[in-house]
Length: 268
Image 1 (cartoon, rainbow, N blue to C red):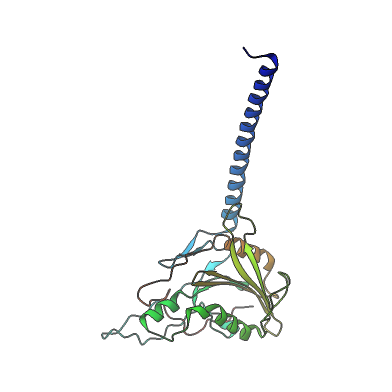
Image 2: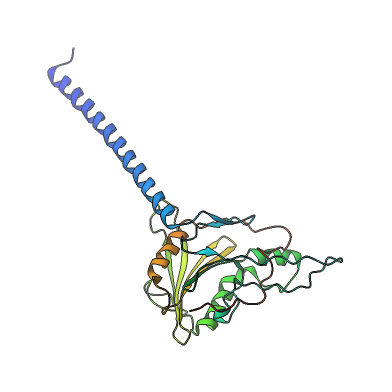
């Protein structure tokens, strides 16, 4: 038979255990509610997932950005040769440059552009020994060279002291917490072109083993109505970015065709 003291101790332990169970259940309910709230935020601000078939790259672009059509691949002649030069109207000709490794482009008409570049095609070209061969390892540095020409700036060799510093890389994790999504490491670069026509950009560089990807958001300080809101959408989209660390294998066939030529200037 239990003593009165022993009975009180068991009762206290039982009540304590029940309290722990209630606490765990409440935490699970709160966690589920937070996950649903986060998912609702993604659905409200982002589109359905865009993916590059076979390359393991996908992202949910921001709602206001519409996908620009890729050029149609030219048909080979009777001997299997392709002689037609295809204009890639996704390229930022308004900057006077061609982005290396361009995979996809989106725009908010007359306000902003979003580009995604990767080194996948360089791997395929090297395997097939076709085209102008460029090292896959140099994609990000080649993009930086092109952007320095377009925006008329010199990239600092030193890391940025903070996220708002111009023309220097700032390492960061997006998202900052692993509460809802696995953070990815980016080198972020803020750049501005002060001569006319004026443009600004945010560049997000990411590496997944040998795969290199850059997401570039370009806008006009004069004509973009809500650049910060659009940038917030881009950063939210980066939370959904998936880049598999797998080198592609297969025929040297790029996403949508060649990348020669330029687009008409936007109506900024």
